[in-house]
Structure formats: C-alpha cells, structure tokens
Length: 345
Image (cartoon, helix red, strand yellow):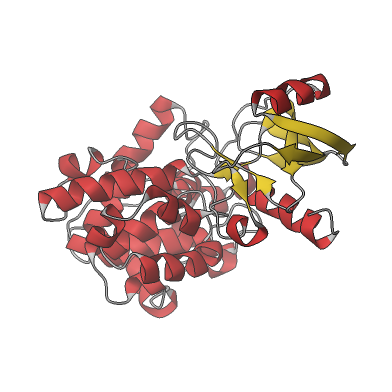
C-alpha cells in the first residue's frame, strides 16, 4: 500500500457522509447495548437483527434484568434468530457481569466472558469505551483480503494472523469507535460478498483487487466439502384434549434449552416411545418430509402425527396457547403453525 494513502482517514471521510448512524444500538449507547448488538450481529444481518434487538431490549433493558431472568425467557426472545448458544452465553455472561458490579472494560476481561472472542471484544471496547482495538469479523476480513489482495482462505490460521496484523496496523487511535463502525459498514454496504459496489468505494484507488480486476477472487473460499444429510422423525403427539407433547432439549447441543418435539430414528420406535411415556396409541399419520439446513448439515425430518390417550398428567403436555408462547426452534414453530393452519392441531 502507498504509504501516503491513509486507510483510516479515507474511510472516516466516507463514513462521515455515508455511514450508518441511526441503528438502534447507536442510540443511548452503553456497553450493555453495544454488547447485545454485537452478539446478535454475529453471523446475522442487520435487517434481521433490528426487530429482535428492540424486543430483547424492551424485555431485558439492563444487565441485571438479563442476569436474573429465567433462561426460558431469554431463549423465547431469541427464538428464530438462530445459533442459540449465543443466547445461553449471553445469559451466563450477564450473570458474571452482574456479580462483578460493573461492565468489564479490558480485552482480557471481556474475552473471558462466554461468547465473546477477540473481535467482539475489540468492537465493544472501540464502540462503547473509545478504546482503540482492531476487529476482524466477516466484513472486515472481506475488505482487507480485497484491499491487500491476501491469498488463502481467511479462516486458515496463517491467513487469519496476517489479517489481524493488518487490522491492527490500520486501526487509528483517534475516532476508533467511528472507524470500527465505518469498516463494518463498508463491508456490509459496498464491499459485499456478491455484487460489490466498487464504483462507490472510497478505497478503490488503492484496492489491489480492484486495480487488478480480481475482486471476485477475494476472499478465497473454503475448499469444497459435501454437506452431510441427517434424517429423523419428529413425533407430534396429540391427546383428545388437543394438547401437544413437547420436551425441553438439553442446554448443550443444537437448539439447547428450547422446547421441541420428540425425535426417533425409525418408525418402528413409535410404540416403544408411547409405552415409555405410558401413552396409548390410537392413530398415526406420516406427513411429507421437510428440510432444515444448519451451517454444517442438512436435517431432513419426517413429521409423524400421533393421536394418543394419556394416562396421567405431565408437564410435557402443552395447549395451543401454551406452545405458542414457548421458546421453539424456528422450524418446529413453522411446522406446528402449519399443522394448526391445516387443522391437524
């Protein structure tokens, strides 16, 4: 890079005119509000986050309210946003912060909290405490790999370390909060993954990918890998009162802590499941296979509608009004709502 070209100066000049300054977490800014936004924005677009953020902040306006809330309430306000470990980590971290009596304001203290890595910690320090720290989220990786024409998949350790060094070199001491927001905005609005708007970019005069017409080559992609497919059956057990059986999943793993439908591997296991829960099966109906895609695999699930007679009360039975208020995984909520609409439930 031409030493006379000041990366931060050019970026901030663009940000002053074109940067986003009216996002909800930029108003009444506090470490807590910034932290919640940064966790929500991990692997999730701003447009998706905004309504969740408003609802979450209305219910949990401060660390204490989040720390003292039942985890079910936290998960309920996260349902549909995905990557539920983020919500569980938020809850754990809030309890730790609440016990401290203050929000941590150093990099070592922040990265010790569940769910906060170096980049998220750097963003919190820059945006909430005006402490100059480099960040390296997906947007920043894309901007830097293109500007400096960095070869290799950015998540490879050697490539990632080189990007961290570059990010640290160009992060300014002054206006660090504006700079952090600016480089995230640049990646989110101009230097996008597809159809980047290079003609509007303030960095194009020194961007190596633009100058060599190789923008589409950066960042280099992860070597292709076949996405595995898992298959399960979801049991939609309904009794004569119209209640549906739901089970709370373990805190660790997919959909941790959320309420979901029982799962079996083979249809032959239906009778065994009913017997284990002292239920008498009177009818069953197989519905069409549906697919939900996670980041690492496809889940093909077959809904199996069961009509059963219950022999004793159980907290697993939920009326329609009750399950509609539960923290359900998005595909389970969609499935139950679909069945209700089609008068299966």
